Image 1 (cartoon, rainbow, N blue to C red):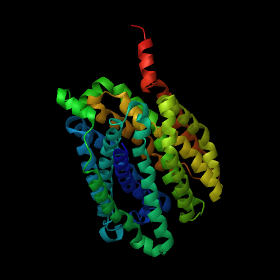
Image 2: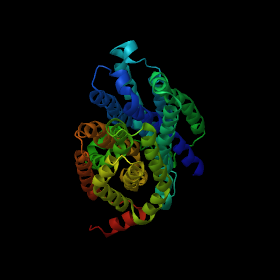
Image 3: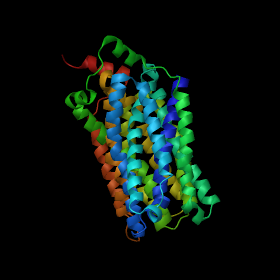
Image 4: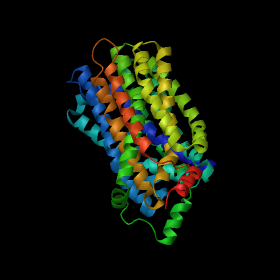
Amino acid sequence: MVRLAGASLVGTAVEFFDFYVYGTAAALVLGPLFFPTFSPLAGTLAAFGTFAVGFVARPLGSVLFGHVGDRYGRRPVLFASLLLTGCATVAVGCVPSYATLGIAAPVLLLVLRFLQGLGLGGEWGGAVLLTAEHAPAHRRALWASFPQIGPAVGFLLANGVMLALTTGLSDAEFRSWGWRVPFWAAGLLAAGGLLLRSSLAETPQFEELSASGRRAGAPLVEVVREHGRLVLLTAGALAVGYAVFYAVSTWSLAYGTERLGVSSAAMLGCVMAAVALMGAATPFVALLADRWGRRTLCLAGCAACALWMFPLVALVHSARPVLMFLGFLGALLAFITMFAVVAAYLPELYEPRVRCTGAAVGYNLGGVLGGALTPVVATALSGGSGPPWGVAAYLTLVALVSLGCFALLPETLPSRAGAEEAAAPA
């Protein structure tokens, strides 16, 4: 389990490094380089628009790779998704700017961001099922939480490199070539991840499905026909997590640097410190889920998000790094109270024959609902000289919708779910 969990963690870290480095670049530099004819605000919105395309592609990736995972195994998904995302990310670092290529530059950026999202849409399902289907039932949330640490590691790597470049290079050097370095580095990280995953075994549950001939012929059709309501509920439930995370990690960077005049180094430092503590808390939250239940922790985290959004905006608007850090930390701890758990929760909601498709589609649709538009909407709501209360209201509304969706989902903690089934009337 240690080897499996480690391989899943490293793989998701590499994939999310690729995904996050684009978000940071969109907040800091892509607007003026690829949309120079726009105003600063419009350029940022356009850059975040290309950022959103990655989220739109993620459900398509979950359908494509989910089919592979349910028909041919979880292992092939891990290799193909990592290879696709790594190649697309390296290519982003090679795209000439608008000054060199004209309108073709942002078009290429859009296509490569779409391919990034396609690969990431498949990665999560494969990595999570690899650990969840190997793990013992009483510690499934703990072991399945290790892929959920990967995004925090990927974020720290991506932003650590960006922080080093923004502080070590002049502004002209960073805008000329420095921002491309993290994208090029993605190739080496992807190669290391593929090597680490080369010796992993297929999951026992998939091998059992193969031996018994019970693999789904058309996983997506079966998911839509028999689990459509469940997919919509899980997508709505997870929307708040994406909204909160990308409000902290992407919108706040642009708002802090462009509107409040805080240095990019200070903003990145605050966010990175909060993300590091969030990653460290992940396995401890998962242990609570193995004891008290998946749905219980998700409801608590969702309620905490709803209560913290107005304090978050007030703390960010203070422009004082210590207060901003506290705002980010509170939001991310509420976020991880849900997302440390969903790696076990979502696979348990679906039967094994369609689990890779169902869990991944629900997870990535939540990304579209909560993550794709949040930087765009939040930037548009940030006008005026006072605190952007519209952003807080928007995030609180998303949290309340997600809370309602979580309330409609069942508990899946093995002992509790069995007890509820036994107590149900015949």
